[in-house]
Length: 312
Image (cartoon, rainbow, N blue to C red):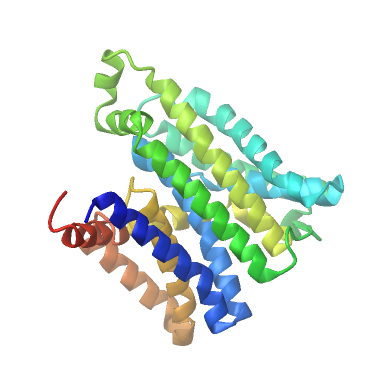
C-alpha cells in the first residue's frame, strides 16, 4: 500500500471520527470540549508551521490569538458589524502585528525573537487592563454574537476550518517553501551563503502563522461570546507549545493530535479532583522525557510504515 494512500485514509478516518463523535454520544458537553480542542488545534498547527519548521520558537504566540479575538470583539460589539466580518479582519490585524514584531526581530540571531514576542504578548495584556474603559479591563468584552447558533454546527464549522488550514499548511511544509524553512532551521548561515533571503522566508512564515492564529482567536471569541486579557497570557502560549511538542514538532498534523490528546486528557482527569493537576503534570513529564520526538506524529509514522510493508 502506498504511503500517500495510507496518509489520506488515516486523515479521512480521523476527520470522520471527530465529526461523528457528537452524534454518537449526543452530549452538549462533549461538543464544547471538542470545539475548544479543535480551536487549540488551529493555534497549534499555526505555531508549528513557523516555529517548528524554522526552529525560531515563538514564546508569544498568544499575542496573535488575543489580537484576533479582540478584533472580533470590537467589530461585533462596538462597531456592530456582522460577526462573519471578524474572520478576515482578525487575520489582517494579526498579520499587521506579525510584521511589526517580526521585521525588526527576525533579523537578529539568538533568543531575541522569542523574548520580543514574549514581551509583546505581556505588553498587550497589560494595555488591555490600562485602557479598561475601552477594553473592559479584567472583564473584557462581553455580548459577542455567535457565528452559528447551533453548537453542533459551529463545531463542524471549526473542524472544517481546522482541516482546511492543516491541508494548506502541510502542503506548504512539503513544498519547496517548507524545505527552505527546514534548511533554515538546520543551518541558517549556509542558506544565506547559498543566496536565499532567509529573513524574507522567516517573516513570511511568521505572517502565515499569525494569520491562522488570529482567525483561531476570532473563532474562540465567537464561541465563548466574550474575550478577556487572559488570552494574551504567557500560559496560553506555553500550553500551545506543549501540545506541539507532545504531537511532534515540524509535522503540522501531529500538533492536532497533541491538542486533542491534552484537551481530552484535561477533561478526563477532572474526576481526580485535587489530584488532577499532579496526575496531568506527571503524565506530561513522562511523555516529554521518554518521547522527546513527540507521541502522535512518531506513532503514526511507525504505523504507516508497518502498513506499507516497511517502505519509507
